[in-house]
Length: 481
Image 1 (cartoon, helix red, strand yellow):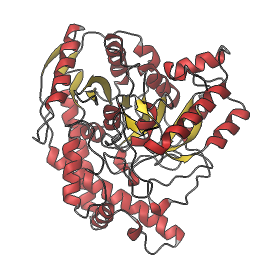
Image 2: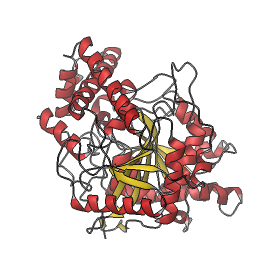
Image 3: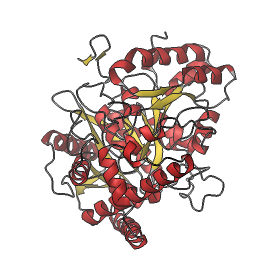
C-alpha cells in the first residue's frame, strides 16, 4: 500500500511515478486494494478488471500525462476490449466488448490504467444508481443515500478515494448531479467535444457527452486535453479550441458577466441550504472581480421535458430491438426494470413526426441559450433542488412512469438545458449542508467555451479549496462518520 496515495491527484501520482518516488505497481495495487476493501459497502464497481489492468501495466505504458494512474470506466456507452458492457441491465449481462472505443483508446495512450466498470442505473436513465440487476451504489458521505446518477458508481469510487478521477457521461446532468452529491468536480464538455466512435456518432440526438468526475480541476482539464477531438468520419464536431484546457486552469479569467438563477424552471421548491451555498458562491465570484446579477433564461421547460422523454424512449427502444433481433431474444422487454418497460413501450409508439418535433425542441433551447450568452459569460445556478436523496426514493422498480419522470426532473431541473443546447457546464464542490452532505454549484457557458469554465474553476478552487475535504468512510462498520 502507498499510504500517501489519496494526497495526490492523477497528475500528481503520474509525476511521482515519472520521478521514481513510487512505482506504477504500487499505485495500481493500492487502488485495487482500496476497491476490494470498500466495494462490499459501496457497490461502486460492478465489473472489476484487476488482472487486465495488471497486464496493461506489464505490457508497458506510453509516456502520457497520466502514465500509471488508475481509472474506472462507466458501465454504459464505452467499450473496453475484453470487459463487460452490461449497461446496468439483465438484458445485456453477457455482453463482452471486442474492441476499444475511440475515447478508451485515447485514455490508454494517455497512460491510464483501466480497472473495470463502475455501476450505473439501467441504460443510464436515472439520477440515482440503483439498478435491479447489480444493486444500489451508496454514497460514501452517507451510505443511506444515493451518490446520484447516472455516473454514480464512478462518483462514489472517486469520492471514497479509490482513484483520483473516473470516466462519466452526461445526458441530462448525469456527470454533474453525482459530482454535486459526492463533493467532486464534474465537467460536461460541449456537444461532440469528445468522440463516441467508432460505432456511434452521437448519443440521444447529441445530448449525451462523455467526460469525467475528479477531485482536482487540473486532472479534469488535462484529461480533456488528451481525449478531445473529432473521430474519423464524424459528420460534425465541436470547434477546435486554441487553448490547452490545463493551461486555462492556471490563468485567472478576465472579469466575467455572471447571470445568477436561483429559481427552479419548474417552479418546485429548492432546499434552502442549497440556495444559501449558491448565494455564497455568487458573493465569492463578486469578491473575485466578476459582475454577478440576477438573470432569467427563457426556454420552454415543459417542451424540453416532453422532448427528452420522446428522444430517450425511441433511442433505447431502438437499441433494445436491435440487440434482441441479433441475439434472437423474444422476451427482451420482460427482462427490463418496470419503469423502463413502460418507457420503451411508449417509445415504440412515437411517430417520426413526434421525434422530429422533439429534436426541434433541442434546437429551440440552443437558440435560447445563445440569447442568454449574448448577455452573459456564465450562468450560475444550483445543480439540483435537494441534497443527495435517500436510497429507494428514485429507484426504477415503479410501475408509474409519469411519477418517476416528474421526480427525476424535479430533482435536477437546471442541468438538461445544457445537454439539449450542447453548451458546456460544470458542478463545482463549493458547499456542505449542516448534515455534512456535499453541495455542488452549477456553472455553464456558451458553446465551445470550455476554457472559460476551466479558468473560472481554477480560480474558485484556489479561493476555496476542497481537495482535502473527504468523507470519513468507515469500511469495518459500513457507515459514514
